[in-house]
Each structure stands twice: as C-alpha cells, then as structure tokens.
Amino acid sequence: MTAAAPVDPLALQSQVCFALAVASRRVIAEYRPLLEPMGLTHPQYLVMLALWQHEPLSLRQLGELVSLEPATLSPLVKRLEGLGYVRRGRRADDERTLDVTLTDEGRALRAGALAIPPAMMAQLGMSVDELQALHALLSDLIGRTAAH
Image (cartoon, rainbow, N blue to C red; front, side, top):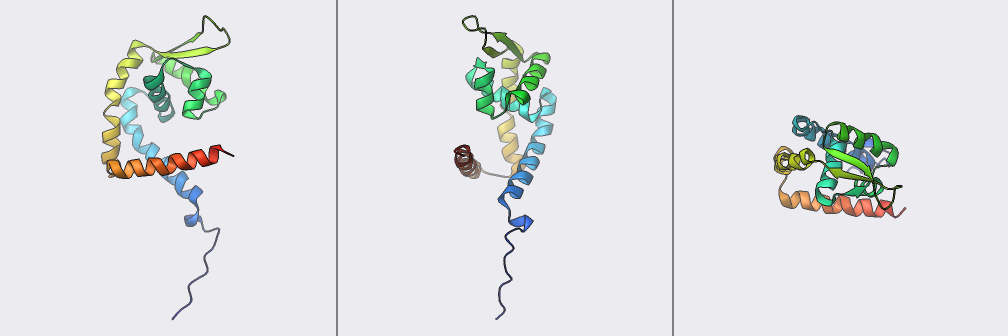
C-alpha cells in the first residue's frame, strides 16, 4: 500500500478563487455572441436586466443591484444612453438623485433578450435544476462574502 501524496494547500487547481475566476470568464465569454447583435456587453446586459425588472432606478440603487461601484457604473450607463437604450435624469423632488429609465428602444430590446437564458442553458449543457442549484450555491457565497 502506498501513502497518499501530501495535499499542497496552495495548489492552483485546488483553489476556489481560481475555479470561480476561470468559470466566470468562460461563462461571460459564452454570452458575447448572444449579446453582440444587441450591441451590449455583459455588464451592460446586467444593467438592462435590472432595469427591465425594476425601472426607474436611481444610479445608487442600480449600482447596489448589479454590484458595481459608481466609477464603473456611470460610464456604462452613459454608453447605454448613447445607444438609445436608457435615459438619465434628475428627480424633480430631489435634484441630487440621478434616475435611470428605459427608453422605448430599451424596453423593446427585452423581447430579444428572452432568447438568451435558454440559449445559455443549451450552450452550457446544464439543466434548469443544475443551474438553479449552482445559482443557490453562488448566491449563498455572495451573501457570506457581503457580510465581511
């Protein structure tokens, strides 16, 4: 009987951070061909998802929903405005608050986006149950790291 080789606690392939980073890059890359015809990048798609669900949103609320800092989110929203998908404007009752709303073109884009989830499911070769289990695990991880 041979002794098991000692486990290296710093082995790259054993690191959760490595697996998450590679999986994230690869999954986002799978979105690219689906989003390009819409003129969207993946971060812009996340913003559009938030707005399709909750518009209007203040820039601060939008940043919280998509977990982006204002320095990253502001230029992204400006680009979406340049594409004609969103409109930025100050609230009448509070000039300090910048609201983001969808334009008619931005709302219409949602119809095409409905094809993305099933296409991604097919590309990843995962069932709804597998994706829901993965989502639950990752959401739990996000919650645990948000507490720090």
